[in-house]
Each structure stands twice: as structure tokens, then as C-alpha cells.
Image 1: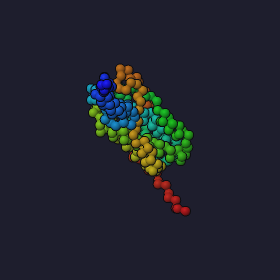
Image 2 (image 1 turned 90 degrees about the vertical axis):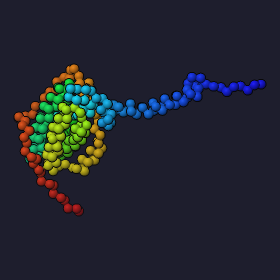
Image 3 (image 1 turned 135 degrees about the vertical axis):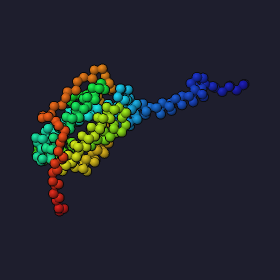
Image 4 (image 1 turned 30 degrees about the vertical axis):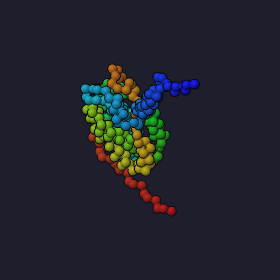
Length: 262
């Protein structure tokens, strides 16, 4: 009896076919992390820039659009928080910090609405859930507790956005976004200074909180993720009085007395 010839596969089951299948699976496995992280929060600037659209003012990246929305959101809750601090603050330093917040965000709000209109970007008209929670916390506080919570919550929020401003200013190729980042940088730094001057900032807790949220997530825009034909109307913020943005330096509270160790 003659021995049977070896069984040889055809198509995908041949030796060559199996090799091709393995190579394809490997390529898909390598490509999956790139695809799956393309639209997740906390990804690097390179991934965010992949969603770039051209404008007459230069390329507009996902990071740029996120920054414009964040500037608007900051004003939507920090301006009323500043107005409240002018009334509820128990020290001149806290009240001065509140006044800086009001006038600074009135100035930035006019700037960000102008930029968004030129770039056809939709802007929110309400604070997000986290910001509403912060406002509720401040509403419920009184006296020195209010001063402490105001200084620490606002200082944490400004520390988070400060790193975003720096990242955008360093990377953006859009002239409008670059100019807005310059204005935001000056305003946020002023607010950080006056908040620290209250004497209530807990820097150890601040460092822990900032480390826990080192990568700011993308902010979902209220409209399509980019220029749109109908971006809607961003309602202007209207602080009491006429904003001048020519503010005095921070008023400093005296440092708390050190208690001797028992």
C-alpha cells in the first residue's frame, strides 16, 4: 500500500495563510490601543491635535477647542463665586480676592465670546456639575469656614486650569487661541496670587488634590466638536458695577498664629 500524501491546507488554512492571519492579528492588536485612546480624556497633545480643523486664524485643535470652552466655564461659576465672596468674606483679603475674580472673569468672558464667535464655536451657558457642586458648598458655608472653603476651592480650580493654559499657549498654532491664552495666563496668575494672599490656602492638601487630577479631562462642548454654522448665543456675564480690570494688589491676611506643641 502506498503511503498517503501529507495533508496540505488551502486558503487560510495553508501555511502561508496561517502566517498572514497571525500577522494581521498582530497588526490589529498594535493598532487597537491607538484607536481606542483617540477620543479619551487625558490623552497627550499629539493625539488631541489629530482632530485639527483649518481656520483663517490658523489650525484649531481639539485641545484649543477644549481650552476655549474651559475659559467660558470658569467664568460661569467663578464670577458669581467672586460676587458672593465680596459679600460673605470676613476679611478684607477674601473680599479683595472676590473682587479680582469678578472683574477678571468679566474681562475674560468678553474675550472668549469674541474668540468663539470668530471661530464659530458653541459655548456653554451653565456651569458643569462639578462647578455647581462647588457653588453649593460655598452657599452652605458661613464665617471663617466660608473664607477657608472659598480660598481652597478656588485656588484648586485655578491651579488646574493654569497648567492647561500653559499647554495650550506652548502648542497652539491658532492666533486667536494664542492671544486668549495670554490673557487667561495673566488673569489666572492674578487670581492665584490674591487667593494665596488670604492666608487660608492649605498647600499640602492642594498638592495632593492637584496630583490626583494631574491630567485634566476634555470638556464636552455644548455643540459639535468644532466650528459649526449655528453655534448659538453665549449669554454675557453681567457683574454688578462697571468692570475696569485696573485692580489693586492683593490684600494679605495675617498668618495664623502657631500653636505650641503639647
